[in-house]
Length: 349
Image 1: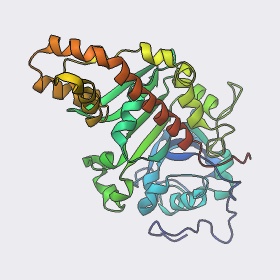
Image 2: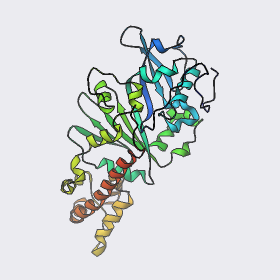
Image 3: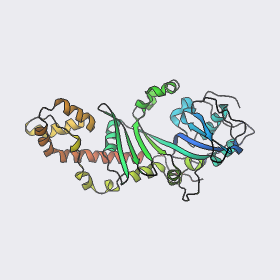
Image 4: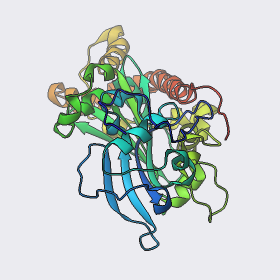
């Protein structure tokens, strides 16, 4: 096969059998760690060859009967935004074979390659990423989960939801456009249009252990491995399954739970006006910062001269303001769940 520039959609030579996609799949892969059996590797691998998006990481669990490779969507080059999915898998296999580092049998890759870990993602378009991150950062979680918002200065940049214990799965939401401006993506920015990612909230679901993979991709037995085919054609929607597991189910039915939650511990005071306009001042100030408590807190610290007096006034109005903003948060969470299911029905292998 001849090398291409990342735009050629052809994968197999005339003498090879291309894998035929089964149907539409909702899964988009950013990074995946693969165990590839030697029996489907058709020529000696070049372990020392540096290829963006493809890296050799060692040999498999049983001597040298398999090789471990890390594959990322960066291999797609200018088509990076597509991520790795069922619609371009033939193209991805062709790119692997064109690198000169690894050459596999395209007709056996999907069924026989096993998955050791994977990051699946979904890009959600939204006008106000800050409001979405706020909604996620104030969402009540199920038992065993923790939430860690990351802020740079007073700006909320991401929200990490993780589960403690042996199965340390995680879900991260972040501004993809802002993330791509970091120095580590300098090479990638040369071949993609970064503006394509404006107003994109990326949801990234990470599975690093076999138990997590089996649960997410529909394997009932602990003795079963997860193949590449299982990942791109899951029996369930792994996005919705993981997010619903993390969110306290009472958020959908019990608004009292939200009313009893308090954000007062993170508020240090407020600058107020007098008279009948006080309530709307508090509400509009909170809204002005897009319900972002970190920005709100920074403003309060720099402007409030009498913390205790301002807090006493704010306390009178806070339950009503909070109820309004929390309903907005619930609506946003539901919109996120809807976006995670908007790829249509699944076609099982």
